[in-house]
Image (cartoon, rainbow, N blue to C red; front, side):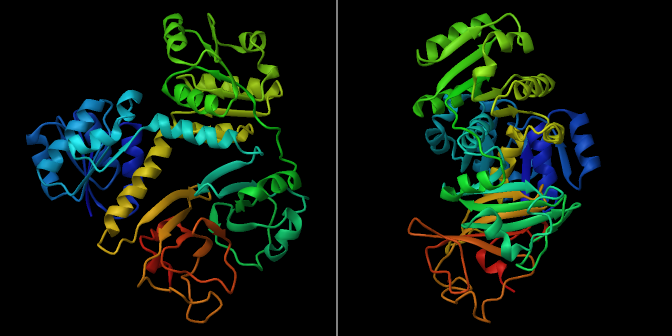
Length: 457
């Protein structure tokens, strides 16, 4: 599939890196020659240097024969125009990012006006991810969600714990019911295990848990947390605004710390009166104590500096704040946060790239029957994928019980859930897939499953 990516910043490079793993025909476009040279040297892609909104540049990039054109520059207007021109020149599908929150709220109008198939806002998606995590009754890291009915968690097996040496067929007795172990990352090698698999200390275990069973899981693992009612947000840009809007609807008490006086004036005009806004000369540990961080249920770090977020996250954690979440722009910092037990980190570029990869995968398999991918996210530290498919009449494996010999899945593929008429089903031997079902599977990322039919041997 031919894909043209316009604008190579953090998001663009991460997107290209993921696309290169899937053997696509890629062309990158950027106005900076040194950026194009660096990317073409590092990855198996073609490059064009020029203005991505200019027809001459787009012609050299071959957008007229492209299956997908994705605009990821730091200019919203340029992204919209890139897509409009590319579609006019014959591109099959177009997608872009829009960073301005007011523009994003009009995305449906923009899609029609500029003939764009998909528009994403990294800040909105980051805020949504943080909001979902803060709503969890546990501090265990969440890898993704299934249709607001279940969540994927990642749990490290501690030496000498009840999980150390546990055989997976007995895991329900240890952690409670309504869960399924989906992956085990052992020393960088991903396993999609069966019931006879025995856990070892150091294993990173992926678990899918129904929503109503999450409190029991948290209790059994000693990782329960009290409900979040009082939240401190440090640094309030667009991500903070999206979060405040969400928290206000959930009737939570929010306090914002912001050092820019003019920005504080603007926030007071835009946000509900119940939101407390403190304008401070600086943001450091002393100020956090003065503003009452130790009385908060949660602290969300949203400054524009990853190192500042890291230091203040550590301080808030040491103050006894039950839930600490941070936005980080450089994905490489994520492992640093994990090492100090700050699991709730969100990188806007990573969240956006997962959405873009889902979109591209859908374009690749699009046909009149459907074969829709409704969700996709990484599990097992990026070694695996959780994918949700729509099942259609005529799809392979329809109406065959899982225990039947005709129902043969590929190696390292696991059906983890079926949603049928809003009912959540954890499959067993008697289960079967019916037309209209949403079918969620876990597989190795390198297998790049594109349709429901491809899960079968």
